[in-house]
Length: 473
Ligand code: URP
Ligand code: ZN
Ligand code: ZN
Ligand code: ZN
Image 1 (cartoon, rainbow, N blue to C red):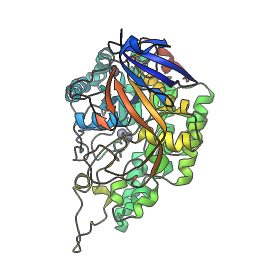
Image 2 (image 1 turned 90 degrees about the vertical axis):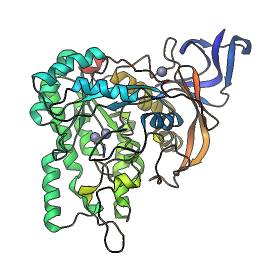
Image 3 (image 1 turned 60 degrees about the vertical axis):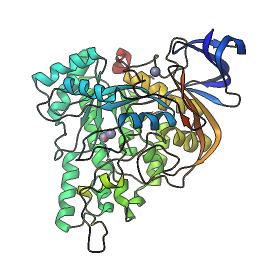
Image 4 (image 1 turned 90 degrees about the horizontal axis):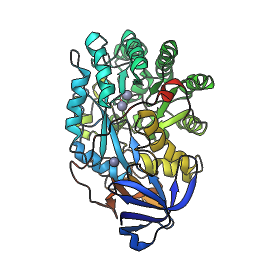
């Protein structure tokens, strides 16, 4: 007797789709084939629907004291929002200050994430390389957390990794099968531009984007890629926004060099005209939002597989946190000073819907591409495949049933965040996850949440040698 059978759905893989049933027992997928209704305690009929492996989100910042703000959601609340968005595994970053041990910080983060209703993992963060922090890389790989974020900017915030740090972490990663993740923005270019804005006393939201132009990102991107080539090790570059950076990746890929490029749904759907709005501070994130033309160039990068990962970079801050350091004028309006705005946008729950609607239903990419970009490739690159990222016998029964005809108009009330605004307000979505299953248990169905606090499990990851050696997903 199985615990659950999902019948008559179209099972979606990264490169093909097949109509079949799935049988689940003890939290795992145990058979794929055709079954009768008396073979399970519970039957879910997926006729006309698509069955996806649960989404894997490797890039979010929850309960992260960054630039003085913490975020609107607890980890449990974040997991509820994730589940509604078809995500069944998510990863966050250890918090890091100078003098701290990356390993101890990852363990502390893991503890904070225990209340999650879905599976979770943690990335280390490196802001300095010395004999103590570098030793932690061995420990982190053994601990099942072999991915490490480094910021190439945010020097003033105290979290920038300088070039020597980056190079040393890359070398150590190559030695012990770790995988670095880079936030590529050139600190000197950004600081130079910010200084000019300060001199002109024009710190408007619009100027924020101008201080971090495409070349600011592309310079850091190519520096990171050259370092990786020099050390001869794979890297992940997060939240890429433009063609200049993609061209650097294309060149690397043409030689089989493993640069894994992520972009986020907000760079595909939100644009820099938001900075012209009075409440444009709500759209301030790094790198900044770009133009519709640049978004189309990102879609080109997705189509030609230069971009293989979609990460939300979710930072869900409510109005009060986004604006906590801003001052008001005599009319009660915020005085525009982009330096005082906490960076980051909400996006975890809309990641899959946006890819289904803007990607598949608008004819840009296939439904298989969406599974690759939001689940399979992420599980492979981040080292939790095939436990996650595929509907296969032996894999965790983390499953999402998708209705490609379901229409939803996005606004704050259809999402499950503790915030009072939605930058995608009014956006029409066609294609939506409707049932989410974690370890064989239905956690979202008919708009209701059935998951439990502390039900998520820590996922131990290890990077496949192939991922580090060559670009071949
Ligand atoms: O603006 C952003 N992206 N804030 C979160 C931190 C980061 O850079 O990923
Ligand atoms: Zn970043
Ligand atoms: Zn981020
Ligand atoms: Zn699971």
